[in-house]
Structures are given as C-alpha cells and as structure tokens.
Length: 311
Image 1 (tube, one colour):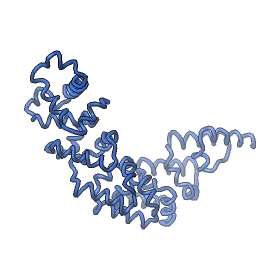
Image 2: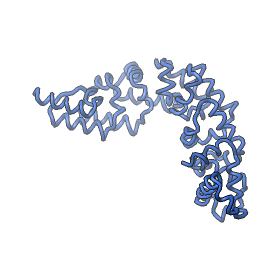
Image 3: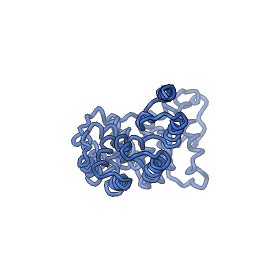
Image 4: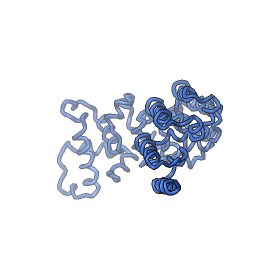
C-alpha cells in the first residue's frame, strides 16, 4: 500500500515533517497540482485522522511523537500495537528507528519484509545494533554456517531470532538440540529455526516428557523427534493430547505406528485425520497411517477405490 510514500518513509523522516506541517496553512493552487504533493500529503493525513492518538484529547503530543506514529503507520506497522508491546518505543528517536531499518536492509532484509518482522517483534525497533542485533547475525554465521546472502531467508522464517539473546537463549537451545541428535545445521537454520528461540526448560523438555508419558521410551522419543523435529513446536494441550486421545481411543492405534510415523501430529485433527479415518472405516479398506494422511486427495480416493475393488 502507498509504495511511493513508504519508500520515502523508510529512507528519511522528511515525509513526517512535511505531513505534520501541512495543517498550518492551505497550500496555493499551484502546489496542489504537483504530483509528489498529491501523492504524499493525503495518505498520511487519512492515517492520522483515524488514529486514536490524534484525537482532540491528545493535542499535546509532541510533533516528533506524531511523526513517529506516522512513519510506523506508513511502513504498514500498527503503531498502537507496537507502542503497547514495546513501551520503549515511546521515547525512541526517529533517527534510531531509521538506523535499525538501515542496518537490517544492509543485511539483505527487503523493505517489504519489515512490516511483518516489526509487526511480530516490535521490540526490534528499539534494539541495540551493537549488543542485540550484531551478535545474532554473528551467531547465524559462526554457529549455523549461514552465508550473508541467506540472512533474509532465516529472519523471514523466524523474526524472533532478532529478539533472542545469543548467550542466554540461542546457544543453550542449539547445544540442547545437538545433544538430542539434531545436527543438520542447514535444517535448523532454514526449516526448524523456531526451535532455537524455544526455552529448553519451559518448552522443549516438557514436550519430550509428555511424549514419554504416552508410553514411549526416551530413546523412542528422541528417534521420533529426529524424524519430525516439528514435534517440539506443537502444543501439548491443543495438539498432543487431543490427537493422541483420538488415535488411541477412536482409531485403536498402536504406539508402534506413531513411533514410525510421528508426522501424524502435524496433520489437522478435524480437517484431515478424522475425515480420512471415517472414509477408511466406511470403505472397509486397511491403510497404513502414513498413506492415509500423506497422500493427496486424488491419491487417497484412488487408494480407497483400489481397496474396495480388491475386497
């Protein structure tokens, strides 16, 4: 939205200054006809008029604060959400915000990526380049062997990396995952990097313990995680418990099936598992768990047809 405005907002604060000075006096007719003016002024005005911080009760807000709100909104960021989730942003200068943007762009992050990155993690906007961000990129290079040109791919996959302490979070998580046997650095960087921002004691270990409580041994759980690292990203309450209950009670499944196909937990219970299982039951066909869930709709229909004809 508003590409011309967004580009200017990302490179300088001139847009905010121009837009905030606009109400002081009406522009002469000749200036209204200029293409740049008609593109820049109406858009910020519409954003500001509807923003809760621009109501008459907030007239005492400083010009700089209003400029900050405008720049965030023009970049596609919900300024109200960003300010509430990152109170430090209230006192951050426009210059410091632009320095963060420039730094990320220098690392290969594209302007179009920023709304999502900042929207998910607004604390990045007030991070220290030296003590917060640079160490993360050094970690990607030295620990995960990510080349400079691939930074964008990793950060897009998991923006939370940029808000994580290398010493207190990323290195301990990497050490633990390696102990489990997850030694594929490329997979950890580009596919399963969310595991690196997961707390070992509060998140990873409890999930492993819950899998053990289902009846698997520690070694079997480790084997399952190596086959499907995404297991460590699933919710115990919303995933493991309801899906295991359906598998063991309704489907009468055996633990051996889950040990061989832990990807079962990655499929939707309502939209995939239940629907497919009921069709299998109705058809009287006996399908392995992996075939029942992994096959495409067309492949599944064909398997059902072949099974019924064979019967």
